[in-house]
Amino acid sequence: MLTDENLKALLEGIIYIAPEPVTLDGILKALEGEDRERVKEKLRELVSDYEQSAHGIHIRQVANGYKFSTKAEHHEILRKYVKSLKPPIRLSKPALETLAVIAYRQPVTVPEIDEVRGVDSGGVIHTLLEKKLVVTSGRKSVVGRPILYRTSKDFLVHFGLKDVGELPSLKEFEELAKRALGAEWAEEAAQATGGEAAALPPSDAATAPAEAATEESTAPGQPATESPEN
Image 1: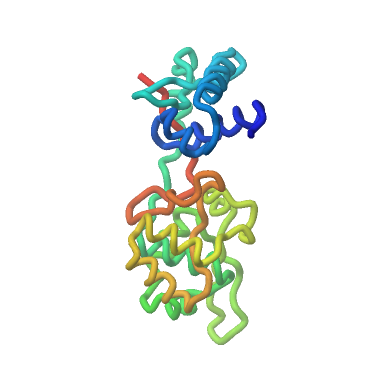
Image 2 (image 1 turned 180 degrees about the vertical axis):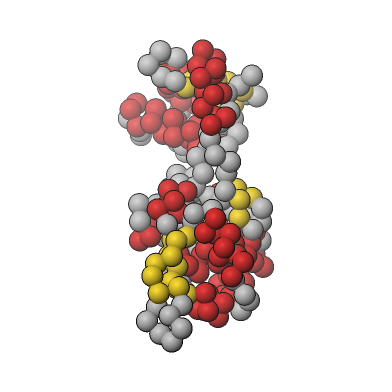
């Protein structure tokens, strides 16, 4: 049986990561064996905790479920902040695939990327440079001295990584890509890297998987900032 402290912590985590209002039944399903009345009591305590003025967010009951949202008294400043945010980075499927190759094989040249992908990647790399997800990294000591490319600090920030050592395994990426782009592209991505890990990381350890970028979708790793309520 969970302690009161652990139970409240789990309730907080479940409500935080849920994309939609989470119902009591949904919570009980995740917390197998927990008493319904005890969970309801701890939910009430958690809601009360977040109503304190020290918190900028609170837990509201929405559509028979629970959801975090900002407090009305802070909305004017929060709207200002939201307007100042940069638009989310959007990546096409070719850009996502090219970024994956660079992330796992860096530093790497355009001819090497083209060989892995089987198509010309020059235009896509230009786009990734503009979005500041990749940077140049000197030149390779071979004939022609082609430019080397690697991922940038912005790449780590956008994808929620401490360093490239936190990139997921190919298996993890395949599951992520299947959900976001479909099984067909996941297989293409695996073939394109010769069976080696070549993927973009989950955006966040807690919410990971669902945030892989789809074609013309938001790249993973962007903060899940909820706009203030009207």
